[in-house]
Image (cartoon, rainbow, N blue to C red; front, side):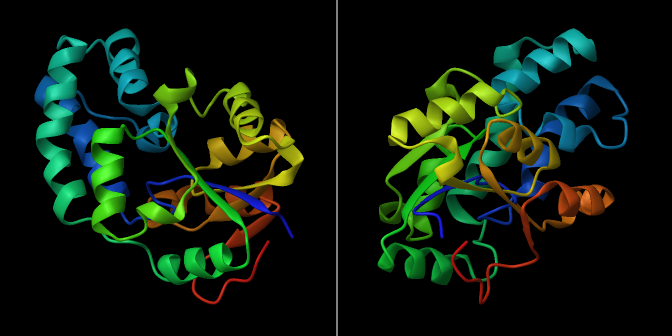
Length: 213
């Protein structure tokens, strides 16, 4: 059993991937750009800043990064603040693991202005020792170094951390950095589901009834 857990947020702890995807795809619709299949999964590890940069450099979006951030916030902030729910079994699992002495932490591409109010509204904020946005650690979840930095900040080796994520790329990258990985089902990742199941050390379809890992 691992004593330190590191959770993704969107699509792992909360049912937010439809909202997260829409806040990004709205920008492309505004520009008249048709997204390629799998785009949301590709950009999910980049965060707002990384996605805005990718849109400008790779998809030739003409909006400035600041204009894109404004569009993202206008769409998503009210939903994170008021609507997005925890996924099935998450609160019970977090509280059971906390009672067992497991250290709970979050590493997400979402910015604090969306992440923090959502966790507080859902009543689970106080369960976490560390709540990191990628910006706090200076890189993105597609970079193995972010997982090493997180482990150092937590005072443990990467092998001592169980990392939970619904994104195939993040699971593969965390594994390459030495973390034990738990793949989490989310409907947004169904096209890559078999790959996620193969890549993760453990795969779960729900947190309901889950034991310690």
